Length: 234
Image (cartoon, rainbow, N blue to C red; front, side, top):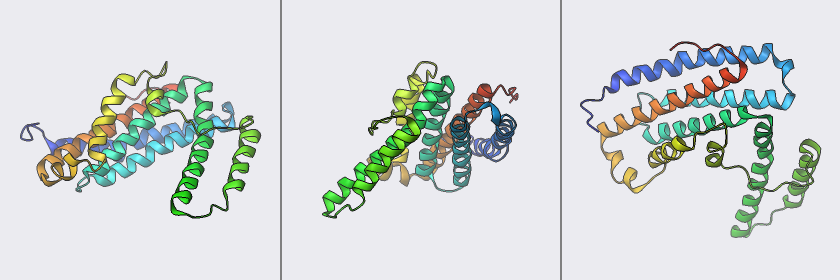
């Protein structure tokens, strides 16, 4: 990339405006629409939708905080989060069955955490005194809230959700996710190379931020379409 041809200041100003004003304004319309039409949703579906919108808002706020600072790995990580949120927004919007699967996966994630905690205890030689209680609680919630006799920890991977029918993001999800991961994780190229080149870091951070803004915008567009909110011209 020729940094001489890339107007970082212009891109940064656009990103700041989108994160600070445009996206927040549209999310405000979404919140109001959900509040005005809450009776049309089952309680769990309304909560799920609000949580997805809040995740967009939260990540946008965190991404905004990286602008103007030396925060390439952080901006890449947040942009990657926004990519994944976009997938889940679209996945849950395809059907009630998809939304319920994501809803169920909360408990699968909890079970996965308890299994990891047990492994950590085993490795460190620590007695896990809460294991039996936690296992029973998960079974109780699975039966009482989800109607399942038991539940495993096999949550739906976001990469598979991206390829699901109606989501159709498989083609761009994988390369975008891998690209952002190169800067989000302490790879050899990042730690031993890129982070020592100030101008390259600035350019890459602006690009990661731009991608995060794009993913956040696409998430708002998807929710607006699902709720029948008229699109706002850019």
